[in-house]
Image 1 (cartoon, one colour):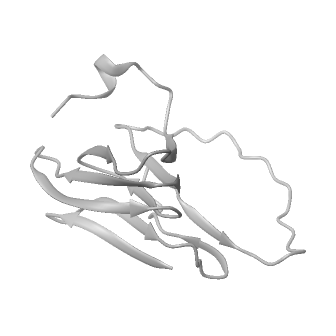
Image 2: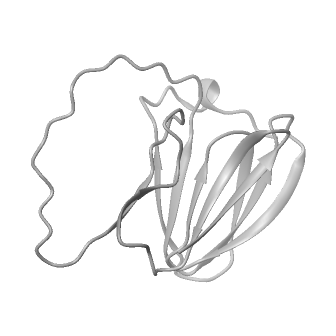
Length: 134
């Protein structure tokens, strides 16, 4: 598994996970302080993960963060720093994941029939309060 961090001024803007070959075990690519906790599972048949319930623990989320997984096709993710300045473009293909932690972003679909799974923290407060077009 190959990971790449996009960092600007000491701030992690994105983490990119490439490919389908993930390391064995449980490996988190986000830090404990990130609003999105992203871990990768790599287990063989028969592995049992103990049943559990998550306890109520107060958390404060100051802004929305996204995780985008490319199921089919490809996209271009344009990454902006926290000052809304364009930083770089990254092409993502089937099996790739990008975790967008800070700054801004935009997407371009590069292939027909592209399928993407997006996960972000909530609750959703609506487009007027959640985002600003750059």
